[in-house]
Image (cartoon, rainbow, N blue to C red; front, side, top):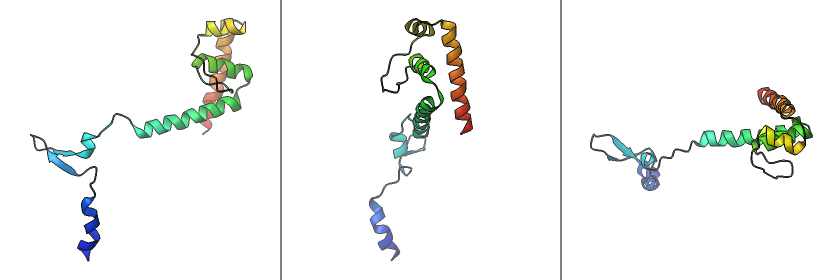
Length: 120
């Protein structure tokens, strides 16, 4: 009975199962051959946090703060339009306000977003 249960498993191969040995006697596994530098956990966490950030930007920031943050960091705006990241000076020129005012608005907006992230 036991052999019938494990018969279908004979063709299954575990990723951590040794398939060979190197010259020093260390086992070589499929996992070693197909390993990747991509960390799935970090990638998923980054995606989740990015989605939260977009949500928080639309919920927490007023129109001017949102525009400055989106232009400053190259984040898609509410219309989905993405611009290249701009300097404070470029944004100030485009909005016809001082660079120092852009800096104050940016600092205030980033603090709002940081507080929102800390709530979670």
